[in-house]
Amino acid sequence: MAKLLNLHRAARLVGVTRGALQKKIQDGELDAFDGMVSLDELHRAYPDAALEDNTVLEQVEQIKESAFGRRIMEHTLPDKEVLAARLHDLSKELVQTKTLLKHTQDMLSGISAMLDVWGKQPGERALAAATLQDWLHAQRMQTQPAADSASALMIRDSFLRVISAQVKVLPSGVDFFVEGNDTILEAALRAGIPLAYGCSSGSCGTCKARVLSGEVKQVRSHEYVMPSAQQALGYALMCSCTAVSDLVLEASVAQSPQDLPLQQLNGEVRAMDQPTDEVAVIHIKTPLRDRLRFLAGQRAVLTLGGSLAMEMPIASCPCEDRHLEFHVRRLPGNHFSDYVFNQLKAGDSVSIRGPGGDFVLDTHSSRPIIFIAFWTGFAPVKSLMEHAMALDQADSIHLLWIATNESGLYLPGLARAWADALDNFTYTPILVGGDLDATASRQENVALNQVGPVLASIATLLQSDIYIAGPSLIVSAMRKLLQDLGVQETRIFADYEG
Ligand code: FES
Image (cartoon, rainbow, N blue to C red; front, top):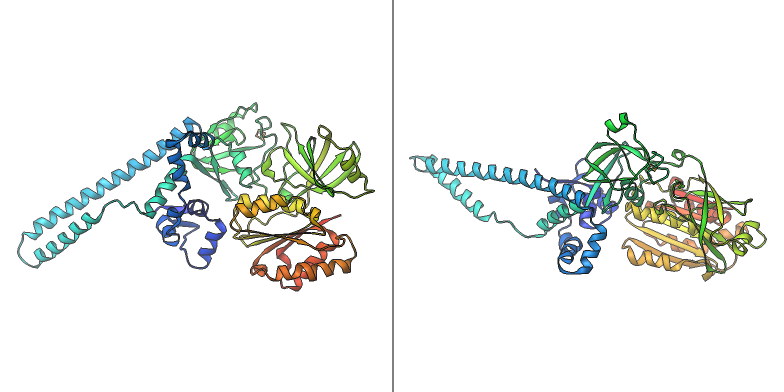
């Protein structure tokens, strides 16, 4: 029976996004059944994949040959017990396959012997038996294991199954991979899957999930004591266990902002950056046992100096654990902004209340994505962008970052780094001059004359999900322009600053 892979594993194997694979299926270039693809079919659609990108196999060679390779694998390999368990599973599969092969060979030998007997009998049957015997002999002579690219795909799949495990979460159906010694929670957050959790350090019990199939192993200590009834039902703490084998879990995943509770916690300013005169970047670390659970693109209210509060987009990704990042514009006369630029320093404590807002990714969509960020509207877009990269679902991502001058594009290195690292990402910086907070007619003019032509030149505009963030007037003007260009209202998502 042909080996079947789900889309996530298949995409990983041939080094493309899930979105690209889904598009091939929609275009009829790849046959799938019930969300599964056969290895043979995958090889037919991507005949050169294994030959062009042998990174994983090369990694194996590196282990053998160099100390550098050993260091890489020390970082990415799971611990010995997990590795041994996965090798054990693979060995079991190998033995089953060998048994089946032996049985098939015995069967063929039996048929061959019968044909020999029939071939010695008189009549037409002898002729047919001799013909069949010749054919069988020729087929057996041809059956040599071939080291072709299809075999290389199979080898890579086996290797990936040793160094990582796939986790499927029910009832949502989302899935992700656990690499190395990561806990299941770390791997989920890194993959952009918002599993329920609280402390992430084994004390609150919020991350417990039921293991429906597969095996987990504790790799971090925990204080939380699992009730024995839940232990018997197969519950485990996701922040302290890793996946030994592929898993199916029953766990809650936040699907929308309404699934997350309002939280209040205190954090500490770890660092302040001022990439340009106009913008300050605040890095906050939350306490070891108190994290903010949020979806990429959401907001939180920061309170500084005991009483100065402002609701702001969170610029970091939920996958960054205890790290929260906020981007603050210099607004002379605004008490909050003045405090950030003149008094806030590393070590200060801040209070955080959130999350709020619904400017989040439509994770069920595999449409191309266009992000349009005006000035510090880049903050929520950065969070969404990192989430989109983790989900690896969009076939193409285009970022338009618009500011009045160079200093408004305050993290250009980051946007360029994404462009360098991702094949499916395009970055277009746009300088428009003037004032982005000016009158509505000025905003409409900027949208229409300076951003409009760039948007109109994007071939996938009408098929895309479009996320816009920045000052209210310009975001409203942009929204209207997109509708005038024919973009469906339901595919436009907006975050209004101020
Ligand atoms: S998140 Fe608190 S115990 Fe896992």
